[in-house]
Length: 103
Figure 1 (cartoon, rainbow, N blue to C red):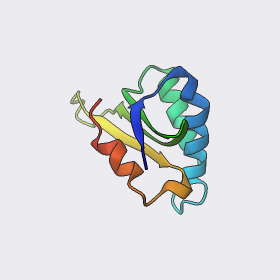
Figure 2 (cartoon, rainbow, N blue to C red):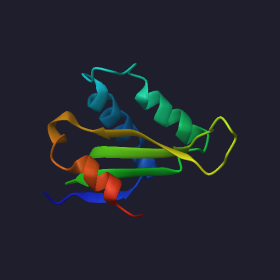
Figure 3 (cartoon, one colour):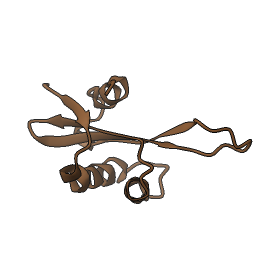
């Protein structure tokens, strides 16, 4: 496996959406809105971190990080997720590679 981890590029948007849909398609606890959340965060300029895992030119994973509000109004907090990996790539270290990358 020669996985490349990199920042999201504008041309990746459709592939990220497809990966996110596929990753959560059969997940037990989901409302199947993860792709909408990522797109809304991107559109609002709140997708602080958006990185992809790519194998032979195909995006096989994605992770998003965005700012969150906490009840006491403390700033500087970020939420992780969703983290999405194509089903056939799950369990092969893609999610871990996305989380360990420093970009």
